[in-house]
Every structure is written in structure tokens, then in C-alpha cells.
Amino acid sequence: MRTVHSLKELRTILRGYRQQGKTIGLVPTMGNLHDGHISLVRKATEAADVVVTSIFVNPMQFGANEDLDTYPRTLADDQEKLRLAGNTLVFAPTAEEIYPEGLARQTRVVVPEVSEGHCGASRPGHFEGVATVVSMLFNMVQPDFAVFGEKDFQQLAVIRKMARDLLIPVEVIGAPTVREADGLAKSSRNGYLSEEERAIAPTLYRALETTVAELASGRTDFEALETEAQQTLTGAGFRPDYFNIVNSQTLKPATAEDPELTVLAAAFLGTTRLIDNLSVRR
Ligand code: PAF
Picture 1 (cartoon, helix red, strand yellow):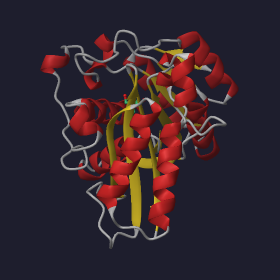
Picture 2 (cartoon, protein in one colour):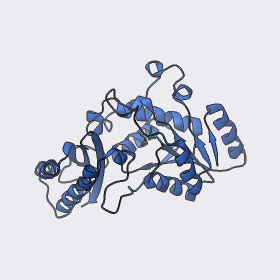
Picture 3 (cartoon, helix red, strand yellow):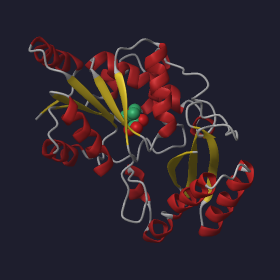
Picture 4 (spheres, rainbow, N blue to C red):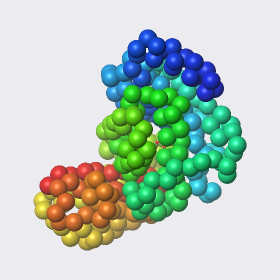
């Protein structure tokens, strides 16, 4: 497995693969890889001849008071995990390689509607940063398909719309959330949790499960359900950011007629912000 840091080298290698008629799968990541990321890589290796995993802590998607500086950078560990998972090529560029003129001068991609609300409301500019870097990764790698985790449900919706609207010929594939034994969704940010916070953290998933069970039983008093869940989270020691029941396609507030609903949640434990979601067909 090779690692390249420059776009020039990436393009040279990928040109060779394309000339041999090989299909290419892309797994975009910010590194600090856990089993969730590795499941994306394994999914990609099942479908493509060549799998490129990008590792880039994208400064454009972090807000001023967020964890850009402290975000864990663990390239050597990540390389080993990717090698074992059958990954072909790691693309680990510097910020200068991706944004040579700096962030202020960079052309940006704005995806309306699905970027609004939920994480988009709490993290202004976040999805603009995600859509911009992912569209650039699609152009740099020109993969046949790219795999993203469903844990970042709104991100996946933003990327699907971005690819559709900009006619980018990359198939966007979602892969199921990988969880710890107690239900906590695997996340690079779980490493920030203290022992005490880690013990509380699965309450987020349990609150989602409870809400989904109520929805499956036919309840349509969505606001009351959201409030009940927020109270559960607050009682457990969380500071809820949002707990929203939405239409799974549009991410707009749920209506009684929607055939599929998704419960989107974000909550702080101390300074760590956890997100998760669950969907239900009715
Ligand atoms: O989900 C992530 O790790 C990032 O948002 C992504 C898609 C790699 C873009 O930087």
C-alpha cells in the first residue's frame, strides 16, 4: 500500500490504474481511523479494483471555536489499519496542497436546503467546507464511487445532493453506522470522553431507540417525543444541541404522512459533541 501527499503523484498513479481499466473507489476521511472507517474501506474493496482513502483534516469545515488544532492526527496507525483492510492507496495531502491560495480565496460549494438546520444550524459554514472539499476530492481522484458513513446522516444527504446538482459522475454510497457493544456510535471524537462521560454516552443511542420505537408504534406527536428525549438526555448529564424527527429524504420536520422518518440528534457531554441518528419506516 502506498501513501502519497501530492496531487501530482496521486494523478500519475491513478492514470496508470485507469489505463489498465481498473475501477476506483474513494473513502474520504479525516484520519484517526476506527472500525467505522474500516467498514467503509472494506465495502469499497468489495466493489472496486483500487481503493483510495484520503486522510485530510479539512480546516474549512471547522468553526473558529472547534477542535481543528486538537483533532487527532495518527497517520502511522491509520496506514497500518488501511493496509490490513486491503486499501490500495492513501492520499494524505497538506492544507497547502488542497488550498494553495488559502481558505479566504478558495471557491466554495454551497448546498442549499439539506445543509440548513440540525448540524448546519449549530455549525455555520460546516457543510460548505464539507461540500467544497468532497467535490475537490471527487475531481482529484475521479472515482467510480465513494463511500460515506450513515452516522453523518446530514453530511451524506448534502454530498448526494452536491454530486447530483453538479452532475459529478460519482456514485455516492452510504454505509451503516458501526457501534460499540453498548450502542455508542464509533467516532473519532469518542476519544475525547472522560471515563465518566463514556459511561453516560450510550444514553444518546438509547434515546434514539426509544423514540424510534414510539414512532413505529404509530405516535405522531413529534414535538412531544423530541421534548421527552431531550429531557432524558439532560437528566443523564448531556447538554442536548438538537433532537429532531425529520423526513428521511428532505430532512424537513416530520409529518404524519411521511413513510420514512429519521431521528437526528446531537448533544454535548462536557465539551465533546456527539451525533447519532436512527431511521424508521412506517
Ligand atoms: O466525515 C468526514 O470525516 C469528513 O467530513 C469528510 C467527509 C472526510 C470531509 O472532510
